[in-house]
Amino acid sequence: MDTVKRPDKRAERSRRTREKVIQAARELFVAQGYGATSLQEVADRAGVAVQTVYFVFGNKRTLFKDVVDTSIAGDTEPVATMDREWFRAACAAPTAADLLGALVRGTGEILGRVAPIMPLIASAAATDPQIAAQWPDGPDPRYTVHHAAAQALVGKPGARRDVSVAMAADLLFCLLSPQLYLLFVQDRGWSRDRWEEWAYATLAAQLCTGPAVPPF
Picture 1 (spheres, helix red, strand yellow):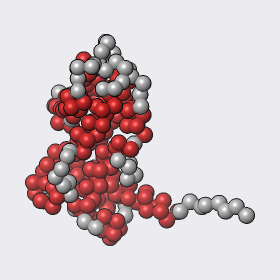
Picture 2: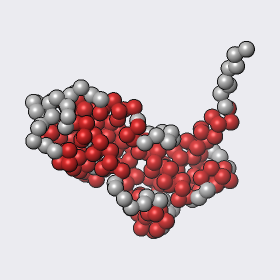
Picture 3: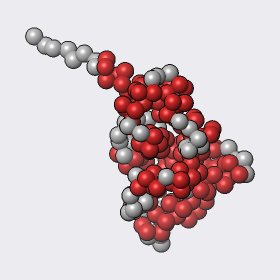
Picture 4: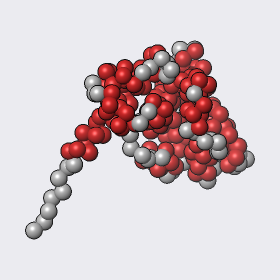
């Protein structure tokens, strides 16, 4: 007789609890800072016992890293950016312009989530050295992602033949940075759509042949 695998209700409850705590922590960290936020406040906002927060995350440093990681990913699934469906689809796009458009759109969604917490990372690391230790030295993960995109882009129809993978990776890494995004969106009041149009047009002029018309 065939057996039907039932949903694991306990695992689903744990996942939802984890998501609620992370969301509550993100809101409080952004509103009042890492140092000023207690795990009791996080628990209260999430509607759980503080013992639950300790059980799931262990301490505030681990919770903070999960806030950062899930802000990048957009969910709590342990899937790297280069393994995400949107990134794979971008790299498989038929032309350089299509790839660039999908990359800018996908990166814009990430930056919309990550940019508000970028100042928190710097301030938290300055007050708690163990925060910085959670992101070990080595190649910047952002550069690794953009280098992979650059490798795919330079071989596509419509890519400029005088641009190397290294140059394309540098342009993507710098122009799609959280710091530059914050300057435009936070400091100058641009909408994310306007930033995406600018980022695409600027990069397309450097990396692609033909008119730099955003494909979105």
